[in-house]
Length: 115
Length: 109
Image 1 (cartoon, each protein chain N blue to C red):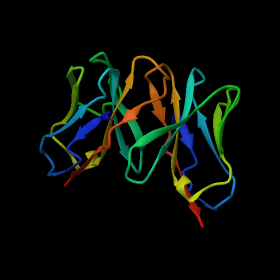
Image 2: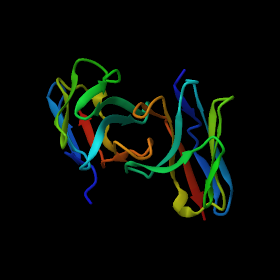
Image 3: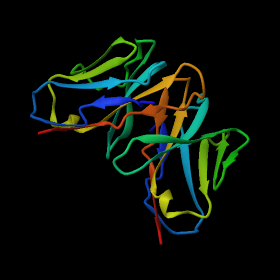
């Protein structure tokens, strides 16, 4: 079975450019999460969706960040305009509606470098 | 104070050693607790849940102390393949999952 699929795997961009990260959750999973990981701050929860609806976006750092989930099989995280401090690995994760609460299935991550 | 705190390590131990990690959490309303493992430049993966009564999975033992608000992970007879970063996870509800910064373990021959 396919796991969580993220794209791009790597992106290098210049400050001020728009960045769009994409995620396809595991089919049948009802919840989707976006995390950001840096050496300094570890894994930070940015936003999560239940049944395509954003539930908690309090972790989104500022208005430059936005996330959407137009359907059950696709989500995007957009940064506009990007800044060097946004450089990090961005993980998308999904979990089924039932089953163990803690089992998040992560994608391989999108490594973003903003110059 | 961070919601979930871990000793970042690194812990460098020889093969066969026993090693223990602790994790403290600040929210007494936290409901569920887990340990995840993350290999270098890879995604985190669930290692095990932590139950109130303590639980064991092979060489791994997890324990929870609600009164002192900490959880622990014990690894016995450590293997080279145990080298990774171990992340403590605390939830306030089903979906509000907060990760610690991780403890790095290196097992040496």
